[in-house]
Length: 347
Image (tube, rainbow, N blue to C red; front, side, top):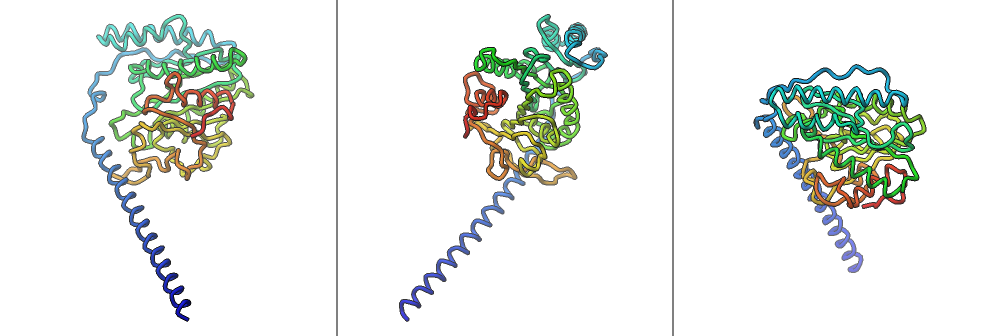
């Protein structure tokens, strides 16, 4: 009987310990949620009170975009020429306005080698540029940028597209026809703004991305393999566009979240990938959704978390390093673009 009594006592202690651990874990989870919501509130407050230089910047004059018909493989050269001419006119108008930085950026875009599917010099500006032979491509990578990407900062976004194109060229040796598209097809939010914490711009921009993917297939054919490579806030745009979208892969890079609780909730047949560098500050952004000041802010589940269910691949470095030449993440993005799943270095 003594042995039986001691066994009962040990079982009671174990149950008590388990209950204590469960209560402690619950408290930690609640504290974490409270801390995340508190940090999110602080970020929103900061975004509301910090004046934005861009808001005070005078509007730079620019022509209306070129009027173009349906883009097809046969009309690509005409489209490129019309958009280069529009960029050249925008450059002249910016120079006359005294904005030498914008004028130089647009003058570069008007160069004879540039392949612009779209150009709009008004406001922050929009541009869609092709690298490679779009009409003959077997595989296409579409890069969707994050916050603070505009005509004034386009060079750094373009550099990532060029790095990916070079990586693809090395890996294929010219055996595959691959095109890379830099899609600055939406007004990106400022990093220090309320817009970057809400899904408003993503909701507005997603239909444009959906239309563009359809146009790509009109040019390159229905069988072309399309991969969306979505950085930072761009992953929220891709998340909104994802349901039913005819793409083969969606990669979320340094993502604050997509607005969906899981990869399955994106309602797409595309493979969903995610990566975050060890030094990426986005890891410190609360991956929650909450209501503040009458608006919904935050983007929900962290895409690299097991709960989201994406295929997580290797990345190192910071928030702007995913397309760095020689990086593991760039190799992974090339593998995703080419459909070489086994070649993607998994985290």
